[in-house]
View 1 (spheres, helix red, strand yellow):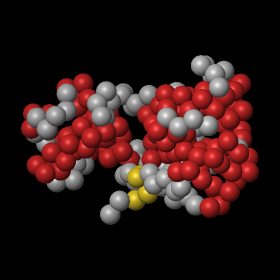
View 2 (spheres, helix red, strand yellow):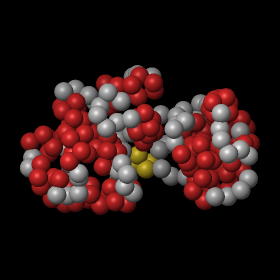
View 3 (cartoon, rainbow, N blue to C red):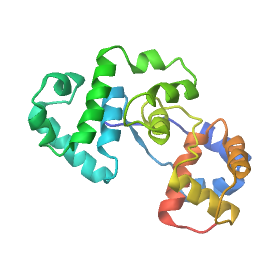
Length: 204
């Protein structure tokens, strides 16, 4: 069964109080469900596959892998028929990235080992993997580790929404830090509403 990011009225009440302009969207959009991927290898592999393609296309590739090999695991990439794996729609460059991730997981990289660490340290360790940049690492914090105070400065949707809220074409570092402070400690939940605002194009 799908797992969704866990939040509720406690987080929404804090955001309404600290960022009234966001409260408008909370009331307009209601509870936004965001599916999470608790398994670290799956989350990272899907993130690599999704680079430069749509989420729908990524799911199609993953469904092909699952249909042919069962649930994709690190061992599939380390010991399986890579030509057959690539034939499911994974380019060589991405396949090499996933192989590196699989090797790291088999060597001890795990959600359990990273979970006690602060957000910044988790991001730093994940960015040591080829194919995983800062933005992807921050998305792992949200959709795998379910950290509640993540606001990605490099996310286009987030920046678009914040610019609209400020009535500006660009966002300064000071602007961004101000928003981050007011959304804390639930900046992740704020991100859900900012993404929705950016996607729907509503005006404040």
